[in-house]
Image 1 (cartoon, rainbow, N blue to C red):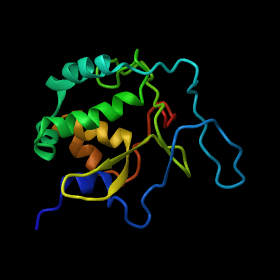
Image 2 (spheres, rainbow, N blue to C red):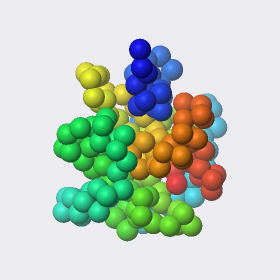
Image 3 (tube, one colour):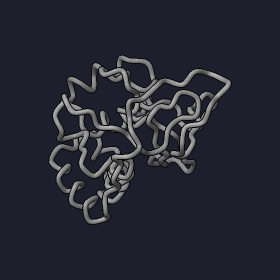
Length: 168
């Protein structure tokens, strides 16, 4: 039986041990686990308009890897995921087309325990919504085969960002 590559990349979904989400909100003091610091500033976040989202999705289309099209055979399903990604990124930033030297921050939902950029989604064939990490979704949709194969060797956790900021 072949394993679902999306499940291999993103983990088991809503099962025990899956990351818990919280909606984006102001920082609160926590007496529990230490949360990683982010250099992200809430002030520069500018949401995209629906028209800007549609335009950016069309701009991203040529960069979508065939594995993503196989997983989401209907354009509307793939576009819905890209829309959710774009809603959490400021209008002047682009994690796909901006150069590696530019830090693109996530302003959407984060996990409760460790403030990882996260996304709620219903996977094809599932009825229940699950939580997955934004950097893993981006890699699944846009990474080359060579990069994707290397990423698949890593634990099913959010990828560590080279800048050290998990909201970047």
